Amino acid sequence: MQITSHDAVVMFARYCQARLGKAASRKVRATAKALEQRGDHEGHVVWNQVADEIDKGLKPVSKPAARSFPRKRSVVN
Image (cartoon, rainbow, N blue to C red; front, side, top):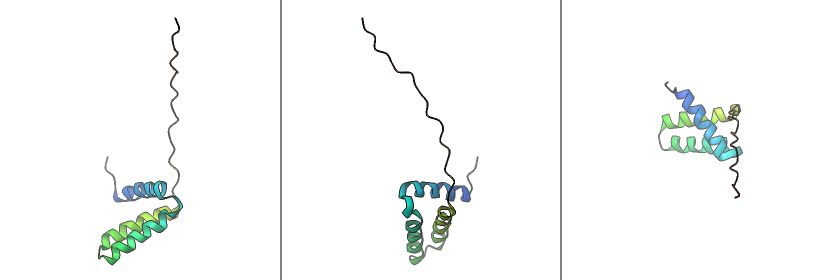
């Protein structure tokens, strides 16, 4: 299974949103701007794509149901 560049952008957008919360888009765009000022055009484009995905409003990832393990019962003699 290969991960496309778009898949990578979406995964990183999810990470940034989870890590940075409501400030994610603003901080990611600030990073993009800093990269552009340093002359890293490709980095600027990719970070803006990440911010665009955040702004689109990512759908929440469904989490698997928590497994319930039976409790160990203490043995009383």
